[in-house]
Length: 406
Image (cartoon, rainbow, N blue to C red; front, side, top):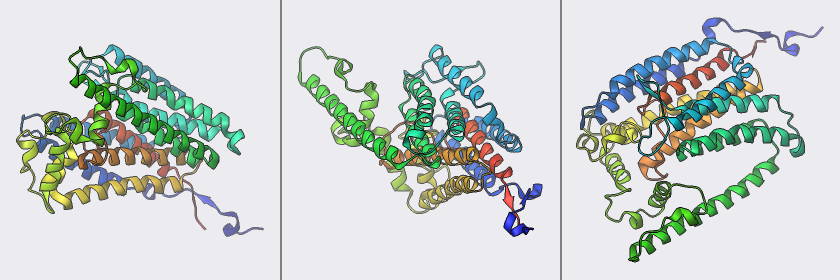
């Protein structure tokens, strides 16, 4: 008869050992910092978004612990329903209000929701469901699963792009490739897609260069301005091309720094003047005096406010907290009871990493300004609550893991 060591006796852990308490502690720390710096960022216009952020964070924590108690495999059963509702909500935005020329919100009367945030979660769930059921082998055997996953991601990406929201659109491809990698799709596929990505990047560069030439010719010409969209290589909006061009050649697009390059310059000033320990909470000048515009200081550029007031030490602490949360997701993935849970945990970690890298990167001037919020810190109910929902699912994967006690 085989011993327990040979068999590996599967035993459920006691309830008190099934919670990962480190992650919610650091999430709470990030939320406290969020409220503090949103209040500081709105000193110029006296906004009350910090009070609303408290409500969103509390609602998020309630949802977090509620979802944590559920068995995450319920999402495998109802993945199609969650995905279908998210697609429907993305369609509803086109009949909703336009803010800054974009249709990204559904107005419920007492507040607005941004369906693209929920769509990210729904797409992750659906993608994980597709690959956990798919037959994965050599490239030919895997093509059906790859096709279904591509279709799953293409629909929300297309609808989000039409809003237009290029930043949220670009979050989804890294998640798709992460799912495929964890599912062990053959290397040949990644080589082929890497070559395709290089080709698309070259096409984007050519499109932006032609846009720059077009604008230069219009400035020199006395004739009426001709729209570039008629000869465009890619279906981008002019402001999106301008953002990319501002990142690549800011001195060309905005040599005086008073146009599209303004936010980037003010964020860099905020970061650089913060020094090692910062100026102190509420003492940052860029947001307080309105140089960092009130419209972006409390959301897209909240990290700039943090860096100015808490300096390098505070910024490092915030990044350390994010590292704990992200690596916690990866740890959960390694302990998952099945492929579905592993795919969810890793893809949520990737989503957090992309948001973190792009948001902090645009504050430091190393990534284009795309409007991606900083998880758990930027103001915004839809993203805060959805982020807590996703982390709650990861906690559920951890709670329902299988341990082998010898």
